[in-house]
Every structure is written in C-alpha cells, then in structure tokens.
Image (tube, rainbow, N blue to C red):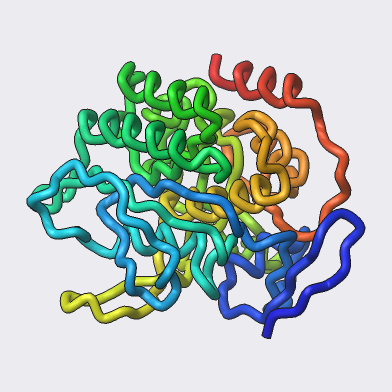
Length: 326
C-alpha cells in the first residue's frame, strides 16, 4: 500500500516493502521497519542502463523500458538477467528506488562471450548523447554496472564519462566486486564518475549487534563516493524461458543501480540540475561514517528518506572528490 505524506519540501511517498535494501536506505539507523519512504518516484527521468539487455516484460518494469542501442544486433535481445536486476534496483515497481523512472536499454554486452567491449561502450555513449538531445525535457542518468580494468585508466572510457557529463548526464559506476583499491579500477577512476561500493548488514563480533559494513569482495578506499546495499538484495530475474521471477543478488552492480535510482529522484525534483549538483545532494544527505571496513577515513551510505535541505556546495563536493583521486 502506497501513501502520500505531506512534506515541507516535496511529497514523501511511503509503502510497505519486502526489500531489505529499500528499507535500509530510507532510515539512518537500525533496526529496519519494513517500510520504504522516499521523496518522489522518478517520474519524468530516463536512466540509460549499459548492460547485457533488459527484459521489458518483467512485471517490475513492464511499460517503462525502451529499447535503445544494441552494439550486437545479431545477438539475442537479452543475454542474461543481470541488466534486468540492475534496472529493477533503479526503477522496479516494488523493488526499485525510483518506481516510475523510464529505463532505456543500452546493450553493450556480447551474449556469446558475456563481455562488453570498449567500442560498444563508446558507441553506446554516442547514441545516448544523441538520444538525450532528442528528448531535451527529460533529465537523464547513465548506469555503468561493470568494470573494465583494475590497474590503469582507459582513456576511451574516461572520455565517454566526460562526454556524458558534458551532456548533463551523471555516470553512476560500480566500484567492482574485487578486493582492491577502487581508485585503480576503470571506469570508476574516470574524473567525475560516481563510484558506488556495496554495503551489507552483518553481526558485529564484539557487540553482537547488526551493523553496516562493506560487503565482502567490494572495492574499497577513498575513491568510493557512496555505498548502497549490495548483499543478498531482492531484485528481478528470469529463467531460461524468460519467465519472470525475483531472486537475491550480490555485488556493486546492484548497489550502483540503487544510487542511479536515487539520482533519478533528485532529477525529478531538480530537472535542471547538473551531475555535480546531483552528487552533492546525495553525498550531503547520505548517512556518514556508518559503514565499517571501508579503507577510508570517511564513508557515505545512500539515504533517500526525509531530509533537511542543507548541503555542501558543489565546489566543495567536487574538490573532495578530486582530492581523493590523487
């Protein structure tokens, strides 16, 4: 059941939820209350999902998926359920952060190899920028739930991030499912990319209390801009016949999806906002220093519940982000 509660800034939507992830990101502290509260629904915002395809008939997404770019047109339209799960975290009807956002399928994975290519990502970026120009009244977000390298920058991806940001589209990137400093991981090490690590709920060995900590096998360190749930999160899936289902997923891909959904909520309320302003808003309202074992002096857990409209300036947020990447 969904209710609309009056808020001093904008409408606050509240619904009961079976999603532990949604339940976690709408409150500052534990325990959870099986309720998801957020300001807005993502209506009027498009999210470009760079992945292996999104199943448009899944009940969590049906009616809100537009087929966009496909780097491998001779492939099946959907390689596996990964992109559908990510899209569900962004905009699932009951399991997503922004349940009325539009998903645009940007397929850059070759099904036979289950891998994307740099060329596919670059070509997909060019298509997205042109498509966004053709829909100028719709703010947009790009979700990149993949990693390409763990030792260096990839200049083509750095350039793609810069081009999307110049077009007004923030790029939300998964930190990577690997125990490594996220500052080394491409495309997360591209200037201006919003890097997302996965958090989990765990029992503290000393106090026996449930706490938030960095999920196992999640890239860490000062280049992680935000953490979001990414351990045993309930999201859409499907079987070999494409019969829809839901299942538990793990990883920074899903965490990035939740942050893309939160960015969609921001752009719904601020359609003329910039990528930097969106990050500034999410960082200012995040729950700070509650995620343990992050390999950094500061951490930010995604929060989309009721907020006070006070935040650091964009310049301050960008200066902090750039300093962490040095």
